[in-house]
Image 1 (tube, one colour):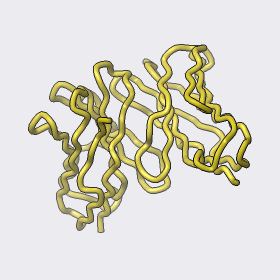
Image 2: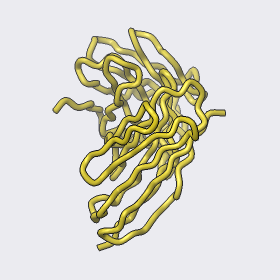
Image 3: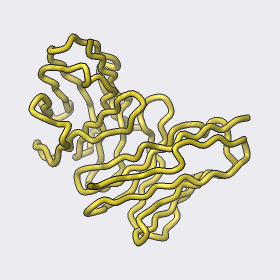
Length: 109
Length: 114
């Protein structure tokens, strides 16, 4: 059965800390892995990863994929209270995407 | 910036009634999706749609569900006879030329079945 597992389920840090969120997957016919940030409603896109070892960066966020070990990490450096959200990992298999349960990040002032 | 829109934002209905949730995908996108998220649970795939037909559907997407692209811009999800357990946030998403393109999500429709 295809599945996506994220860890930790929740995380509380203080502003300025660095966090690493994990996503492991077992999906047949893997094509891409996507990271989303979900605050109150719809997930907003962060990164799409298709190749191993190539880091994607956007400001304080970065992500990398390991297709051999079947996982991805999302790093957030110098966290801010505005980073508080649920971070979702989704893995694409042709026409279908499987989502993990998400990591709830709470950044305290 | 182009965005996916959904209407209504909140729909309340009685059990057994039919509902139609509407989505307008980003205009040059070719792949369309419906997901649902029951409160406190993970986002679940329902169905994907390309070239005017269903590409793939999940076990959740049974005979009570149907999708349609009636006019080249709207993408609708119909639930024929709603059940209490259909209460959830329903998200529409679209992506561009490649199946692995980024999916952009609409703001969602909260469906409450009483």
